[in-house]
View: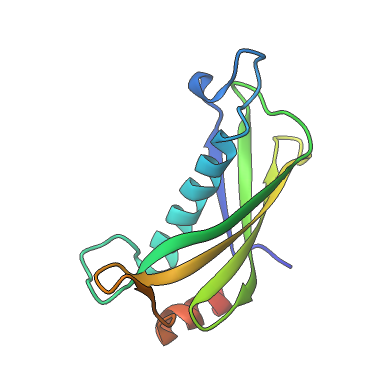
Length: 133
């Protein structure tokens, strides 16, 4: 599947554990940052438009291939793996500067109405933008 979005992240000193490589939990933050940039680019997520529903995370899984270290620049590539009525699935590749795979991941997001505390259908315009990107 070809990527719908790509985002670069510099590994910060604070991202690393005492052994000098990126702590496993930090990768979830990297994925989140890439997703938010993607959503802002695709459908202006987070702006004042109250007609756009919220999004919650339903599932996350990561396979670690090699450690990343302070000072590296990583590229997070997002691909749309599936889209349902209320949820959508992303696949990710996290690559180093030499294009070597650092980690792969998958997340499932659900469109969510926080006031009603329940999932809601993905709006048609957002669904279309996801498919076209």
